Every structure is written in structure tokens, then in C-alpha cells.
Length: 201
Image 1: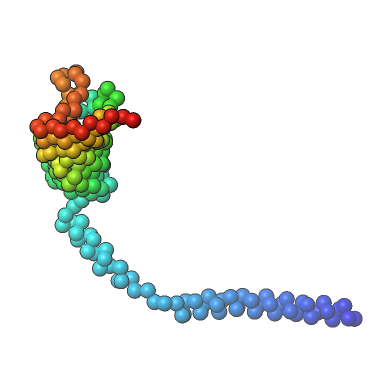
Image 2 (image 1 turned 180 degrees about the vertical axis):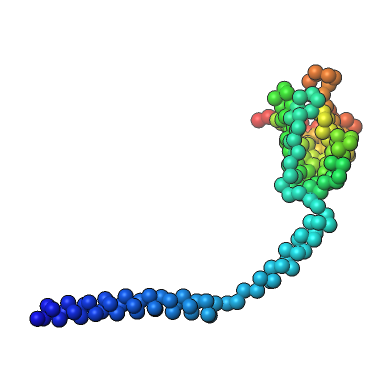
């Protein structure tokens, strides 16, 4: 008799819990919706609207890239943090990094603050502190450089300072170009060239 009473009590408790627990869960879910903070979907619209209007007024690309092969077979790649193109394919850009790899295996890494790209002239004017770092061991810094997009050619737009394998070097101008068709590539410093010779230790 005692076992039967216990079985009946257990059955009643299980039956009650089968009804009570789902009702309790439903009550908890309902309270979440009743007391949750109201979200105003218009809060984020002013920020999005300003950004869209700005993009429509001044179209631009972020993380843009330009790459190609020059007439002498060099591979030129330019990456831009931001670019503002014009209908003719020209435009301006900021945050420039790039590389010029010539067929002889040499490379020149390029960094610049800004660039003005002329698609008609196939050239770019780099400014905002330009650094050219060649695999030959030269690191050249100048306020600006002209860069050809269809051939291997770069020329400083003012004085340059350079760290070279043989020491520190300053000059009024610097030019990188191919010597004749099919010739080698030259890095030439001109005008008041001064070298502080620092022999290798």
C-alpha cells in the first residue's frame, strides 16, 4: 500500500509539472518582450544618410588597386587606400603603396601620401613624402616623384636624400630609367651630389 501511494504521488507531480513548466517558460518569454528596451530604427539613419550623400557627391573607391605590365616588360602595381576616379580614367588617390619589378629581377617598393593619375599621359605624380626602396640597397626619399605607367621611368620633383650601400647621399635630382630599348636599368643622381662614405664593417 505504501508503494502504491508513492507511485500515485509521483504520477501526480509529473502530471502537474508537465503543465506548469511549459506555462512558466511561456511566461518568462512573454516578460522578455514586454519589458525589453524599445529600439528606434531611425537612430542609425542620419549617419548612413550622411555617408551615402557624401559618396554620391564625391564618388570614391577604398582599397583600390592598379596593376599592369610596361612596354619594357616591368610589372607595376599600385595600391591605394582611397581613390577618386574621374570619367576619363584619371583621378586622385591617397595612401599609396606599390612595387615596380623589372625583367632583370630588381624590385623597387614605392610609398607616397598622395597621387595624381593622368590616364591620357599614362603617368602619375606622387607627392606627400615619397620613398623608393630598391632591392639594390638604395632607399630614396623626396617630396615628390613623377612616375610613368607605361614604361620604367621615375624622376624626383626636387632634392633627394638616400641611404645607399656605400653611405648617405644627397642630390638635387634622381632618375630611374631604362638605358635604351632592351638595355639595363639605371639609377642616376644629378646636381650637387654629396656622398658621406660609410665603409661596411
